[in-house]
Image (cartoon, rainbow, N blue to C red; front, top):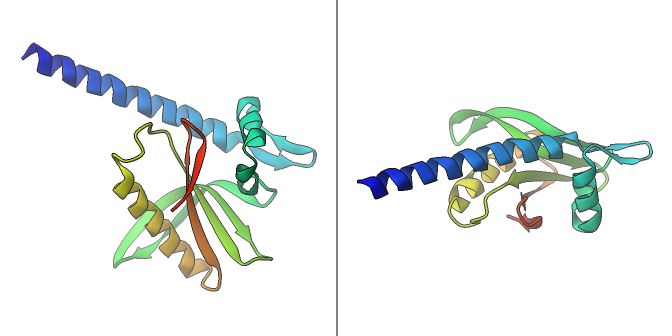
Length: 147
């Protein structure tokens, strides 16, 4: 029984750490924006973005953080918040960026793919003539994944 309690407490500590780390990282990412003189916000995150050029397209002047979206998807009303959204009118593309703090990229993958498919369906209703692309940014190693 002691092992079960110990395992439960460890799982709780791991979950609590992941939640707290996720909230902190989301706040850092949300603070980054493009100003007149370049990127502004959390210096640590700006340095990481600059060292990963593939991320730059998500932090342009017309990008938005924590974008609320709502609508009917698969016959059900949903309300969500997109971590970062870019609407490129010249290329008719919408880019969705969702931050994940998990180290294990496989354990909740199906859940995340479903979440992003909902985002894509909602945005297709708003931007029917646009290509919608969804990405996961794994914050523990800064890997950008097109899903």
